[in-house]
Image (cartoon, rainbow, N blue to C red; front, top):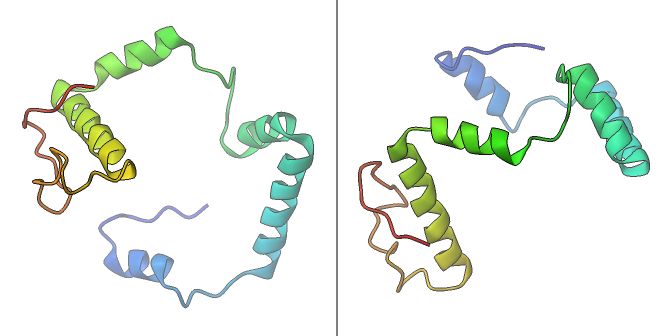
Length: 118
């Protein structure tokens, strides 16, 4: 694995370049993994998570763990996420131009702004 510094603009440009050379060996390995997961499902997925991601333990997160993690997120960030989700629902439903979100500038949501409740 190669770690790229986010401040290294040349490395980022190279990484995102559409002209990147494809590696046939990597394509084959990825295809093998995808096929294995399609055939063996969660068993294969869990094996790859342990091998490549270093998963050590359960793959499921309890409601209690999720709630504790959500509480650790700063309130302004939770509010921004809630607003973004609300706006996405309005847009998916086809109300983008009449929703409370249509006044936002280019989809930005100030963290301290009031947010609609669900």
